[in-house]
Length: 109
Image (cartoon, rainbow, N blue to C red; front, side, top):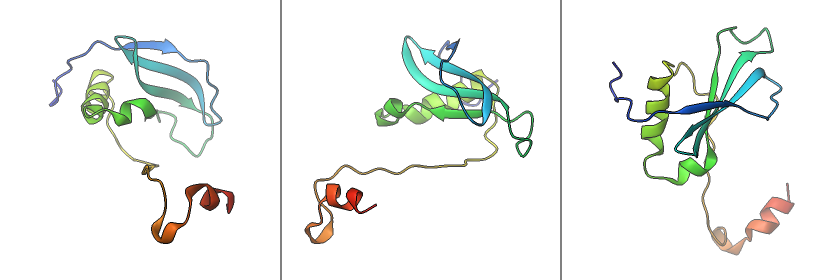
């Protein structure tokens, strides 16, 4: 039994996206709400053959219960988080310190 309790019944459908790292892509949804992308069967031999990549859907990250869904999906799929390979941090604002404009900042790179 999961310590978080599986509250939801998720639907897992074959996704259309192609990944350079994985052969199989699936969409995880709950009540037609996209929760995550699930990737299986790694292509590079540098990844363990049982590796799975679960990416939380970007839109879900704006919801207050996103972490619950991450834990709940992992419990429902019997996945254990072994490694977090990437964390994106984003902040919405109008200008940087000292008045630097975000568009100018982006153009500089």
